Image 1 (spheres, rainbow, N blue to C red):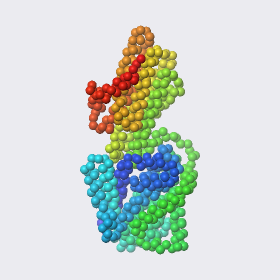
Image 2 (image 1 turned 30 degrees about the vertical axis):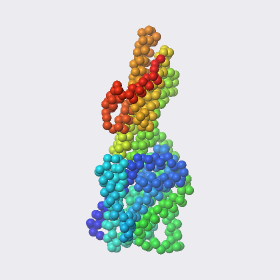
Image 3 (image 1 turned 90 degrees about the vertical axis):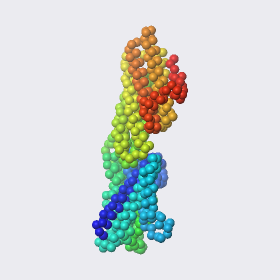
Image 4 (image 1 turned 60 degrees about the vertical axis):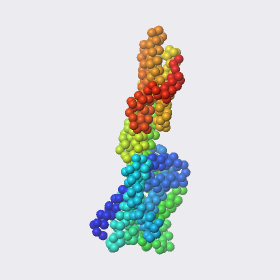
Length: 584
């Protein structure tokens, strides 16, 4: 084997690993976080969890990625540790799909249809289709499909290149002798574990083994221990990701490790015990790519069937390993887990979910603050202050997390969501600030024992009702992304501006008649100013939502066009809200 063969083999390996990464990223982006959402929600039974774990891993082509995601779920409190066990086991089954795809390289036949199944036949065609989709299509979905096809083609071409490069090794005695050493089960397991730990992908290490099998130098006696070790080595990624995580997240990583370790030990003990009595004849036969896929799948299916009924014992073992002897600080923003950044589509979904929670916290703060204007309560005032501080923290955490997501390769939809969320969280934070201001105003009125006239109270009640509706509507629009509903916010904001002017004018009239004091006038001005600015922030959010979806106009241009005299929809809605919120 010459130096050129070595270079070709390394290049083939590089293409293989890169293709697997590109294909996995393309599949994850195309799913838009939906596969991970399914993992989060549909894990009520152990069997269902196993099937879901297998399905998701088969799609994203990485058991390590699925397991890291599960560690993130457990760390976030989204998923219980007992739910995670089934998904982890299923992930090990799902990852075997790669070995079956790669087994196509071993097809040896002159049959035309079978020849079409060989990577050397279909990979260039898929590559061409993928490149055409990437270069000439404007559709995001078609580009994602192009990425998947191109990645798959690169993977298969890399495998084919690697296989061709190692064929001369069949004539190298030192190489064939090396694999005789791996027939020792312990040595084989250690080598498989180390190789997989280094490249952090059992699918990739199995692919490398399949490529080496094409030399005819690898017997099943050597291959089986290596495959067992590969399942242990793949645990490294999850164990690394659990560093600095919550105790339950560390336990999830331990469950993954113990499942593979115990499964390997049991499988090896039973297999070699049977071999001692039955003397399996195939052990000294040269392993082929399909045979490797069979062993890989058989081990993971048998291990899952054996250990799934004992999943609670795995949880107990993980709990004994990671004890509850230390107090652990609660994490408020655990949905924004760094592990989710490995799959940006899901990270975007988690960020949006957290931003929606922030929006509702802002509304709750405002709702409580408005109630304080009528009946002041010291504890409720404290709650408003706590909510305002919490929303500030939300903005900081979300802003940082969204900026990290923004550096990833996102689909157009996810990119829009990140942009829209970044713009809107500042307005929600300002709404909570105005809620705090209203609480301070209520506190001042209470301390001075002042009260508004009955007429002023009636007018404020109408104003408050309008403000409550616009904030509630804004939260709903942000949550559902209902653009039709978003268009109704601006007419209501205009009505609130009108109410603001009318409330001030009516107060001036009462002041002239001596029915109100100057001090209460300042208080009323503070309240109405905060209300008006809250409505402005709601308008900003609605316009941002519409602008992001339409993706083609400026904010001021949109507002000017919306308020034109001949805009029938705006006029009709304005009149409707004007009639609904008419001052007494």
